[in-house]
Image (tube, rainbow, N blue to C red):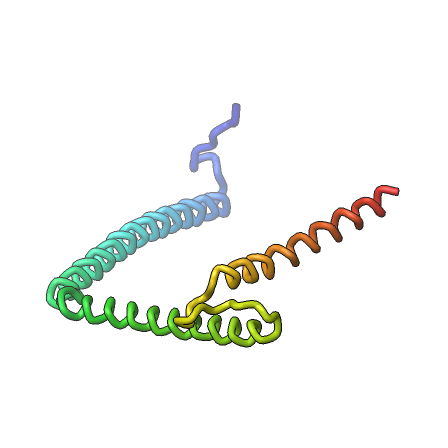
Length: 148
């Protein structure tokens, strides 16, 4: 238990030090209370600002019509046309490659209308499967050599 001294038991220097300590504690309490109050007000202001911004965004989106109806249809049609043109360009490149291969292989890869014949599909399938099979065989032999 600590002995509590009253100010009557203190000399003038101790009394003055005690008074300064009490004032400093009071100032610190007031500063802490002010800081807490300021932080609380800041949070409230931040929330109000967020609420105002959300309200403004909602109002502006309500006043500006969304791209619906004709504009959305136009955009969708434009995208579809670009996709079709890309598809047609790629298809014509494939046909040209088949036409070039047809002369080299001596196999009929295009029918009379210029569309790929069944043999063309066989050649395309083999051109994908053969490298995959070769890579698989190579991996098997490397794994076999590593196991020795």
